Length: 339
Ligand code: PEP
Ligand code: MN
Image 1 (tube, helix red, strand yellow):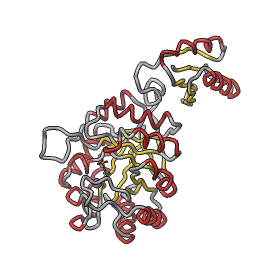
Image 2: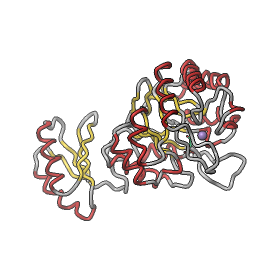
Image 3: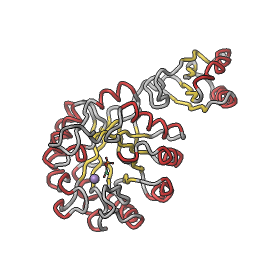
Image 4: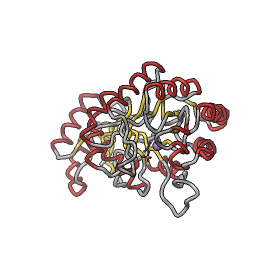
């Protein structure tokens, strides 16, 4: 249920209503909008009539049931798009954030060199996996904590915040100790215990769509994170499985306007995992900006031929720099600020 408060409702009243909502067995989430505050009361829908007593409060304008199964992720609860800021990177609203870096952290030299160079080209956040979810148990699994330390060093050298994946609920604390943003990957989009643990941690979350999750399921996964108190969830469309095998996955570009209609959360595009081949990365990135996406996450490696993971889809520094130059030109027409 959404409890819409009147303009100028005092903080004391908001706190009292939150307390009352909790007593009635619901979890209250205050959402402060530009014009007014609303309180999302989330809980057992069958009991929502018990909240009607709140209508007696003179500062309550109205009660509105949330029609979608995802509540805190829905547009209904927050009309304005959420803008998520991490260091110098912003995603959502007018802001278009670019994240770049290798699929996996391989060495200190590799990650620092990449960080410094992608920043120079215009990236605002570094990516790099220290825990890799690999299809084969015999493939490189990542440098784990040593990789996190290298990422922290690259952040210090470049000034870029970094996002890195967490694949186990037990590792959330460890990864959260180093990372600015926790990534939950496509394969874990419905790992509900991981979603809950990550949502409790407090760091912003980059949540990737699964290769076979519907948009509704994807938003329900975001709801798990939000329901634990996390406010900062960046969604990421990274391609879905279809019959087409000319590309690694099929970029579902329509997820961008659909998600913008249904949710206030920002949605970025990962053209690297969608395409699987570096030649398609720039065109898909331009499409992402043209259709109103809130940013990109791109795999960049100083020597893609030597990459331990996802080399064929990785741009080298020169290719990334050229793509960013074009993207900056397009930004002028798209109404987005590259930030
Ligand atoms: C990644 O970002 O390196 C990754 C494994 O992505 P996805 O979860 O989208 O496959
Ligand atoms: Mn990858």
